[in-house]
Image (tube, rainbow, N blue to C red; front, side, top):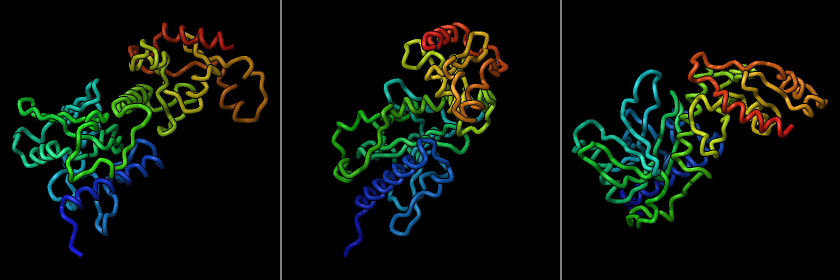
Length: 308
């Protein structure tokens, strides 16, 4: 039997990569470690990594067109190495490799655009942690600004793909929220946890994987912006209790537990996890601009009082 044509291998590798990411995110969630992406998956006995030394990455198994584009994670107090920008319309402004529009990696992304070839986008949230989006498509090229436009939210899926890569054969994974929204949520969480020195403002738990950025004014509210002053760093238990109005926070940063919860008797978790939080004062950021907004806390506290 003849060996598969390069276009057929290309399509099969991309489909396998998407299945791999789908399986990993189902097990691990959206936050994927760099080590996992570097290890990649096996394709016919050949290891296929998803990341390499450059942001535009083509594994050896593919002939020409890259598999992955990546935005490096932020470094505290330093700009990202490439000025990739997320736009409100669900697209990514992805900078060229270098300043030469004819660099071979830039040419190959143009080939991906011309052939409507699906790619993987890896957005660095923090050192060693990435959020993956797939399939994404290069939809425009701007040599003047040395950048491509990449569709992250699937708007290009109405465009007929090339015969070499049939969309119907490629698994897709779209969360209930858009890729753009997930990225913004992760960026918001990163900023909040950094302001709170990677610990719960209430119980001081420092296991980062168990910490959330809890909105004071919900993000579903038009006033619920993603400012650190509209958030508290809370462990998952206290975040859930805050959202369900089991605990409230007064504008003076003192915690109250709902009276019916204080009166319950239900074992050590209730006692130590919630009831003993009553009357404690939150530990907040040193920077006054990042501390909880008293007006937002007052409005949220009134909701807690009504629930009590």
